[in-house]
Amino acid sequence: MSGTSKGDQERAFYDWLPAQLTGDMKADELLIGLVWSLCRSGSGTGLAMTPQSYSRTLPWPGTLAGKPLRELADGIGSWEPFEACVAMAAINASIIPDFSAFEHVVELPVGGGNLAVFDYFLPRIRGANIVVIGRYPGLDAYQQQYNLKVIERQPGANDYPDTAAEYLLAEADWVFITASSIPNKTFPRLAELSGHAVSVLMGPTTPWLPQLARWGIDFLAGTIVRDELLLRRVVAEGGGKAIFDKAVSYVVADIGTARMQQVKEQIAALAEQRDEFKQQMDAWYAAGHSKRFPLLSELEAVLGELSGLDTLYKQMWDVRQHPEVRR
Image 1 (cartoon, rainbow, N blue to C red):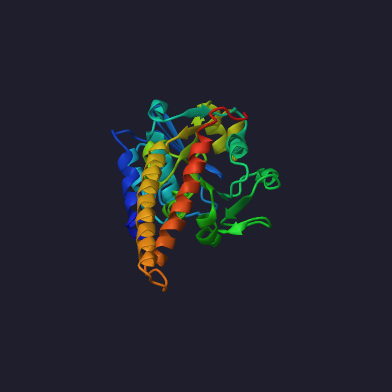
Image 2 (cartoon, rainbow, N blue to C red):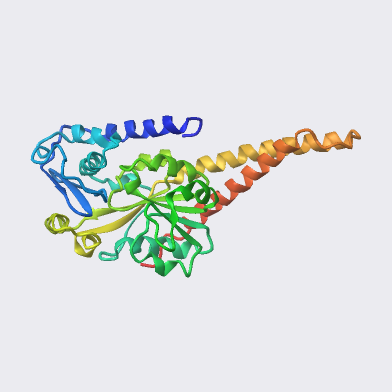
């Protein structure tokens, strides 16, 4: 998505996402719980994190069930947080995951919750500079073992404010992005800032769309429903992490090997530019010039970008060489 402005990229994403819906399915049920919101349609059930705000004046109670999912999904671009939340749940309800379309899929243990995702990845990326978007319960346990920074919209004592993303993500090797960033409109910018990192989009709000690789996502860590009746009950009764006890579990899917190939091609192209600059520099000094090589700044820029892409490719390569991980 390079070559577009921030605003263009955001509009492109929020135009693209609801366009992924097909068919004429309708919402059978909408639940807006304290922590999670749920949309059920036919055999599909979609989740989205409920906005952590309060409203007594929502315009639609009693009218959402029976509406086409496409109509609800159009609200994903809305700045009204509950409308975007309902849209995200509707989008997820419409997507029946076809895991055969993914590169590599691993089901994580039932009951592990969000920490199961970190158990999956962190032992394989020890020593990396890791940034997590969103303060997940229990994440403190990892901060003593890993170089891990947490960015949180409502930061606690060990967190960075969300404005720190502009600085921390540029230095990250790995970024874990909460999928609630999609309805709250921060996802396109976070994905852009994570362009030189391996990125994981995670959480029950994650849509099972391999095309998210287009926005630089390498792995999806989303959930699948294990017990729909229990999930609906827990959501309706205000449950948060309780959904992970038995109702849902995490699955990790690799969607980034095409991006890995693109990075490899970028490295080859930059290496060719580097060699051309070096040949020109050797010829410059061989001709007897004592002044600074006129294209030295351009050479240094290429070397800097090449170094960053080499590091990125190594991270991508290393993590895919160990398909078995600590469960």
